[in-house]
Length: 269
Image 1: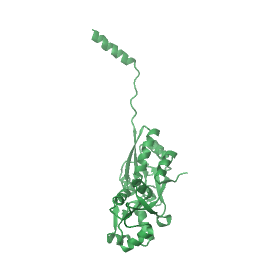
Image 2: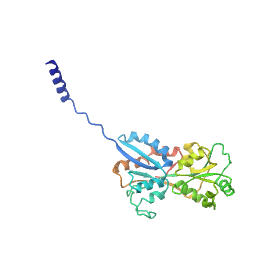
Image 3: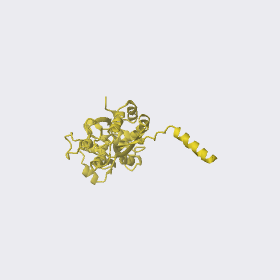
Image 4: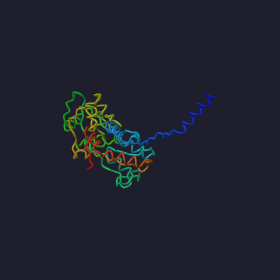
């Protein structure tokens, strides 16, 4: 009897206690971003936890060309940040540079987020004494240097091709002579320089900073154009408001401080 009374008492007390709310489920926000943003966005994600604790950011870092293809083929993505306008244009129905008529960019959300610089980086000690793009061009003509660069679908590779053309250099001829190596994103090119597998590499100034590499020269706009990073919410998102909120955070003073600390220049007003 005592046991029954005890059980009845416990049940009655339990019924009087207020119901505890279930833990809120986190919103998973998938962000596709250029590989050159890996370190900065990882740091920004830590800051964002304080502003949106119920949002879990899931990043997919790769070359912008690869990311664009994945989106076009149906990959789930809420926010896209490209290392060049080209890949964003190819997904933007309002762009004149969209040959396939793809429609993935949510109207009214696209912004020019950041500007970067294309840099000539060298391994520790700079064994070949490459001191400038002018010196690099001369060494390439002589066949006395091994250069790492991005593939043709990688923005940093596309900027590099413009630099080669600026100096009147034929990429196909250089590749045929064995003095070029390639990477399928800027991190691969950066690693080749860091490991001294090449004499120099053309990467972004921010990647050189993150890897602790020496930059001996930066390309001018005349050589390769501006290096602009556009960002947008995609119209395939299932979390539009959360995506808009994250994009808004990327233009905040807190995010600007992180971007500027590694060499990015915020472009928003």
